[in-house]
Image 1: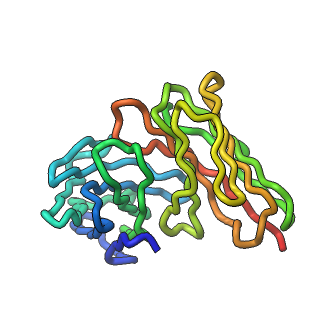
Image 2: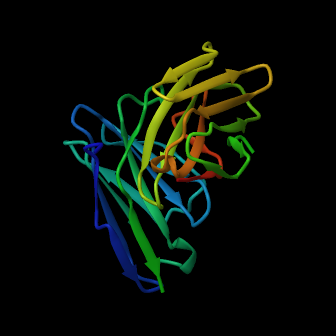
Length: 114
Length: 111
């Protein structure tokens, strides 16, 4: 049990819709990173939020956006959903803006776009 | 690719045997981390090894790092059925704030 919770656990959306995924960070952590994991692949970095500011972004289009709140929880928003967005979305909670310590992952949100 | 690449990608062993997985990367790293994932759920951190370290242990796990060969290995000794999972190495490059994951090793431990 990492103390990082994600909601919802499963979600089915239609192509073109918008989705918001949520993540609570572990107590004492000020950084949340989001990853997309397609079936059979390793997680791919989407972006990181550190102290409520975006702190680095992977190779994802602008329709992937996020927020971090004063309590360091975070949201991932995806607009204009495409079939290829179907994946497991993972958030990772950590301390500091460099990955110098272990990250604690939530159980993920399984998004299916039909 | 700057991501770690694991080898072998699938491993099937008998309970009690040792399992070894390797990870290679292409660019100098700050640290390298190993994670375990059960049945497509969240990742669990196993070990972090820094670029100035050569070996770390945690219970039945042993990780080595050879920066001259840009490779790392994860050894699980006396494997158990509960070790059945996917194992990922993830590299962190200097001045970078992200984990770059490989495709993972699927390990099946047969009781």
